[in-house]
Image 1 (cartoon, rainbow, N blue to C red):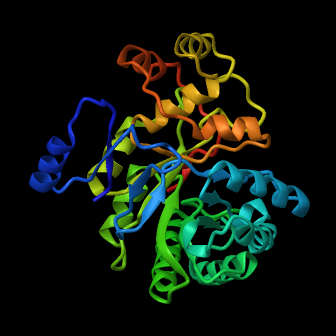
Image 2 (image 1 turned 45 degrees about the vertical axis):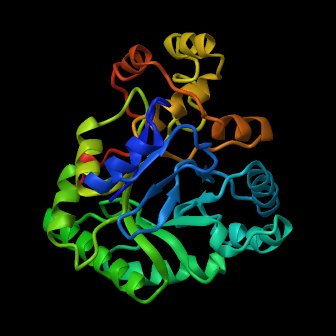
Amino acid sequence: MMAFSIHSPNFSTYFLLICSSLFGVSFQETRVSTKNMKFQLNSGDSIPAVGFGTFLIEDTELVHNILDTALSVGYRLIDTAAYYENEEAIGKALKVLLPKYNLTRSDIFITTKLHPSNRGEKAYEGLQQSLRYLDCEYIDLYLLHWPGVDGENLTRSEVKKSRDDGWQQLVRGKKDGLTRNIGVSNYNIRHLTALLKNNHGIRPALNQVEWHPEYHQNEVLEFCQREGIVLQAYSSLGGTGNTDLMGNPKVKKIAEKLGKTPAQILLRWALQQNVAIIPKARSKEHMEQNIDLNFNIPEADMNILSNFERKKYDWDPDTVA
């Protein structure tokens, strides 16, 4: 069962232990630094609640320098994808950087994703390729990046079969020890429901989706929590190059009131709903701010942030059969 966070510091340890004993729920308090906060996956493994995204960080030297800073700040989850074309650079950087910080492979969590063009039975080969590029013993979490098929004009039934075949190959990869956990990205409830009905023996551990005040599907969050699937947000700040959210007057007003940055407000808003986050940053200052989320947004302000006009910035899975 996934871990849920208690946001009020008034709960006693005794009360938490009773709840854990009676209901089998693992509680984490916000007194725990967000550097150490984790969510429990349905496999029993734990994933850091705050990770580091690497989309559009491609140059080998740049990857090395940015990961050097990220590890020094305290990030222990590195999120990448075959689509990002930086897996090999990340693998090379970690070979050097883990010993530098007295870390071992087991101290960090690596997530990567199948390229949308590697459909169906090609998924196993895609997983093998990612493992070779990352040059490590195993991947912690491997995701189907997209419920559809990139670059091909297929019928609805062919798309569904491709998705099922892809998941079957991920199950094979997990059983073969290539990855410890498997999951999906950009799946809506329809896709998740079909997958859970025919999961080939392993349920998805995580669903990574676009999630920010202008686009969040509460029904997807509720479904995932009910089914023991961790929901993880991408584009928490609105996506690369988009300043709409960071510059939103309501976000800025709440940030000023709480003495935080707009980015911290947007990230804490997700985390406070038990949604994991993987923000990107290039400067040490922003990296430090993005993982320093040990505060609570008052309920009234949470409601303001949760009722923005709807605006989607990235892929729309509702268009996929």
